[in-house]
Length: 572
Ligand code: FES
Ligand code: MG
Picture 1 (spheres, rainbow, N blue to C red):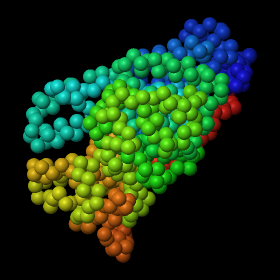
Picture 2 (picture 1 turned 180 degrees about the horizontal axis):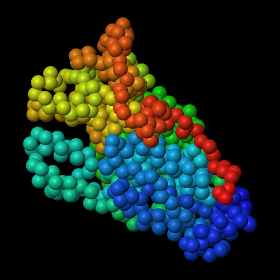
Picture 3 (picture 1 turned 135 degrees about the horizontal axis):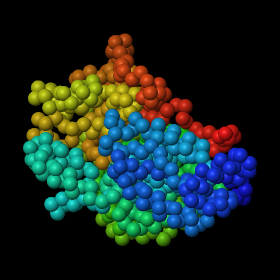
Picture 4 (picture 1 turned 90 degrees about the vertical axis):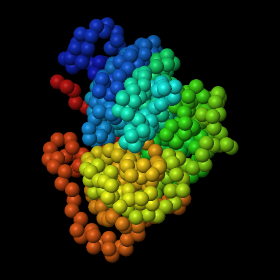
């Protein structure tokens, strides 16, 4: 692209009053006049926040990006956007993913930016930035913040998946509050996001699989100097991407999405991947549906031995060679010609990859597990679909299970009664949690991996079938059916389940059946009362009025698609 066609010229290339205004105030930051001479202006979209600890090192990371941008002859401008930290935000960071994406979209479009570097880390900070950028569609590269170093506690490696283990041990009285606090101090011992294959790592792998990053971006630990190097190189590269006019829509093709789905199955990625990928596809205009996941995942075994599906951590993944190794192993299944941010195909990028530890990254010939990463279920309990991650199950025989429902009407009901000694539950029961979907909670929180009742834990029960319209943390595990669509709050059949109803889960046949007749369901539907959550203003009201169901990516309906990068009116 000729420099004089850059969109930033619509600001900095102007004469008269408008050009004066666009440049004069920028000059208060000490830029010489020739910064405005038509070089590519590169936005660095930063999700730094002290309330998003996983992204707490992003000011430094942005400096590395800037070095690369300056070096390549670009003009870097860093700007903040809404940052979503998984651990602190109530009721759930997911409630605000779409809001953050609006901030990103409008910030990019409204400003004199020719290309953008997205600094992504904690779970929602990746999809929200990619969704927003996709609706503008200028040249874009993602730099992930990188995982934390592996936690060390009493000589043992620990990570976020141990939060669930420790808390169950504490509930069973096996460890004291003091020991729990001690573990808490040992787990997050460096900069970075969760160190297991949770959602943040899954998202980092997703953007690398889609071709939105330089190779190896996903696994380099935040604390490793090579994280700064890849940020620096990405800064250099985005300047070239602007010159080549390589836009998100050139990279985010149907083939790229299919590659990401297959690779996610191979790495045992989080179930949240499904929702975020569908939302991104909706923004860039690629026709992707929940049904596409089964056919693509079916051929793919688990190749990566990372918690929660396996034993290792992201740090080990990097030392074993990282995602390019998995890509190389999978090339026969993937669309090899899919183009990536560095202008090369994924086959070219993976060509030199080498596996340094086959305990961590296995081969197709000898995979970690034959079970595929994700399965999409259908049936009268989830007419528009539901998702399960078979590789995260602790009792694979539950993949084919029939049992009576124990129903919790909402999260408060669940918390109040789960440990009630009189709850008529045994390990054959199926725990059903309603009203934790996109509208019901609101915001679809990560509560789907319900704890088991204390009295069953005491008997040594480790896993049960659990079903909800909510999500599960990517670090969670168990035989957990999630994302039931339509959700209970909009009157899906999930809302009609009663205690004792028989439910049949058959993952091999991808089915989830509520064994109640249609006639009886119709009778119950007549009594259905929609929830009144009491949000009458502000963003949450907008969310409730417009959020789509999980099988559509839970985006807001009016945000699908994009509006491009054009702005015609000047600011004064
Ligand atoms: Fe931020 Fe896990 S809490 S990635
Ligand atoms: Mg999470």
